[in-house]
Image (cartoon, rainbow, N blue to C red; front, side, top):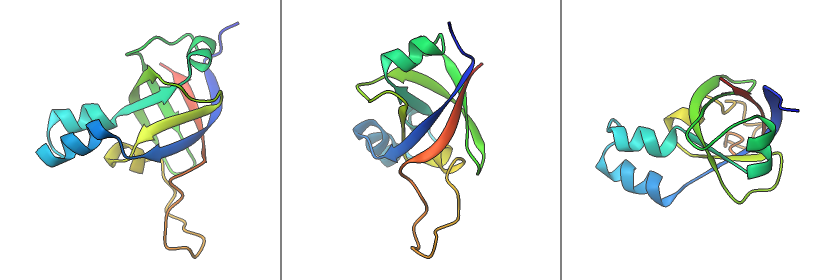
Length: 113
């Protein structure tokens, strides 16, 4: 049975495509394409009825973003987003006195749209 939504642990990080696009400029389409995406395992994609290139809405306590989904070699219930403007919509600004926002292991909900 396919579900429309599921909760995941989101991790963010740098990617080669994101870094290459960043050097061309953060206002360029190539940067948006490199960062406005979500990677997840094939099993999680199938559970939500998703195919590569589909759009999903990712929601966290801090905000939400609409991104393109793609398949990656990740554990089930873990998703990845390249660091950038889009991922920042999801990151809570509470640093718990560390001075660093929680870029790793955030709880998010992924909704098929």
